[in-house]
Image (cartoon, rainbow, N blue to C red; front, side):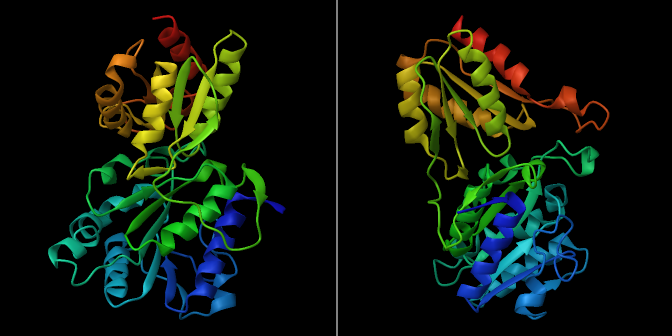
Length: 325
């Protein structure tokens, strides 16, 4: 297997999707000849032509509405929102149309062929318009799936599964790992099951849960904890909607403790939903309160990006506090 970065893996997945299904169409701002602002779609217009890979006007609501129209007519619409921060103008189309199309028709018609790709998160000095993590906004919307890969191998397999899933999917890509993460990725077509978490590391004292770019953060914190004799089990959620309650609950019943790390702000973040569910499932097994290490309840600060991030040191301190409760 070749070692490639996440951008190359995403590009490979998109190429396979377009090649394997002639009804698939890729579009978004600057995704054509320019190859996207991060070059994730580089070379695809040249390979598949302007009819199947093309630029759109700068209108996210229009991109989402166009995707809905294509999918409602049987096409496979792969739409890029250039930054996750830009997805908010498209919320009306995504939440009120994409998510509800099948339900409101009694399954007579649907837009299950829609996949929205979008880079999310900080770590690139992008400031508050290019660094947000808005995944939780969509997890409470019935009819949508929300997927977040953590490495190049996952990015290819989860993206192909998302494009082929019969439900609308929002695929959040951790942009600070685009070129930083390099992994062995099969050349061939493969999929990773949606809705299934991955146990990244076995442990016995505390469960650490994260997704996307934050998985490597909790791995670093777990390494620090190991030097203090604390054994951490690490789980990558991968799919936030629907999320894998069983895998996490099994782990927490074993360790008796849970720490959740995500880059989005604490208040209203998806960690709160996870914590509420796990205390219902595992109340009699918990040895300490469920901990959350998250971003701050502020606009994303450019100059204080390091202070904002829920990094390994913050996570390590929370691990110790939870284990020693």
